[in-house]
Length: 206
Image 1 (cartoon, rainbow, N blue to C red):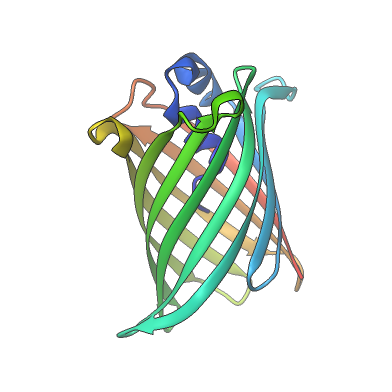
Image 2: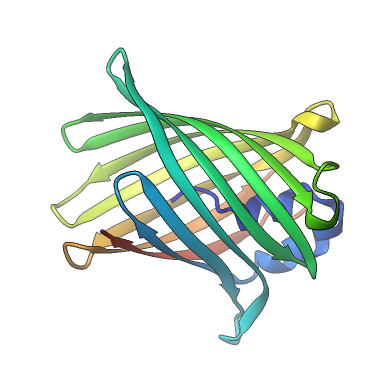
């Protein structure tokens, strides 16, 4: 599971540093509706007391420009979304170049995303983030896959200031032909809040 736009918004703005640290004590929950080319997702947090957290995001994406590069399947994913972080409204958009190769049960992925995030009351004064991600997924059975990925972020609009990265590992279970449930642990590193949190994503495939 890739980083959500909520995580991007948390990492982008200085005002979110406290919210970001608090967020990593919560469980991030994402619901996604997906087709082959389109996705619509909503992400929020659940506190240790099973209450709703203060931060949330909604976002949609489309995959286009399918092609091949050597042994890799490639495409470009465009995403737009809205996040509410620490009572601030944030607009986020991104373009990501994605590569994927499957050999037997093993799938490897490489992605380079350019992300723009801004407060909605001043959308032309935002920040640009460059975020590469590499991942591996192994289909252990027809219905269970294990995966891991690592990503790192730089603030391109601020002389490529170092924002730190995340490493994630988890399992995805195909509950039915159309419903997948993913559970993972996400660890932030090289940040002010080097914490590990749980993540849950339920995907409905159409």
